Length: 379
Image (cartoon, rainbow, N blue to C red; front, side):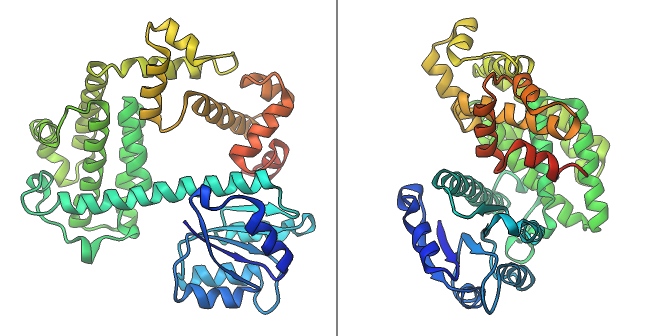
């Protein structure tokens, strides 16, 4: 991941350069600049994946710098801003311009490390999404499985972020994975609503559905490694899919997605993944209790190490990290939706040590619980 630093104080720049081991975190500091103007000149020629920039600088300050990047579409880099305690108003404004996080001066090593790792996870996911879209274009080439349903689509001339209803389709995929009929219906309505709002042509809608199909094929393949694309395409072809989904019918789309959710459920059970669903239910129903991977392995009569392996394979993280993420997300909801004290919320999501809860909250959300509550008070 290519990183650039922008700050008019050389000692800050030097400190950031040595505060963490950038190379071991999969990063390279490719350039440093004393102001936004110099950094903009660089971005017009070179690529960056992450930008860490100060707010107050001569010639072109941080806000002007970020605004220009967005207006001229110079970079899709993740932007992190540096600010002092008395500059939080600037930081809020910068967040509105699209920067994803901020670091308070003097920068703490652990905070910097957490931000870099969070950005790297987002960067990895974006690269994976782009790879899938490339593969999707390949799947829509002559002779490929998806062509049986839609024919050829010209990715080179037509594919861009504005025509892919990605958020709604990804949420629909998740609802299908959960086999939640209410969520499926809600997400389908949201997808077709977005299509109408953007006034998408039939060709573009079909390509969006191709994107969904590719996601669903991938979803089936991770449930059972032995299932190949042709088998999945046969299921799709034999279902209600071709009856009306291609014609833009939300009714047929709902029927197809519901059938596919059942299909995924059957694959999961046959591949032994049903245990993971039970473990996930345990986490959601006992989020205020102490839960361990060992306890789950004993309860469901499965080897502890193997349960850890298949859990990480499905969710992309360890059981412990998944449990922490879920609890912190639940705590974030409570901070916004209730007037409970932070100590009570910590206990409600399974943390008896409030200091440890605050530490984990900052790691996941980038700020303290009280700060998070204040910032979302009007939402």
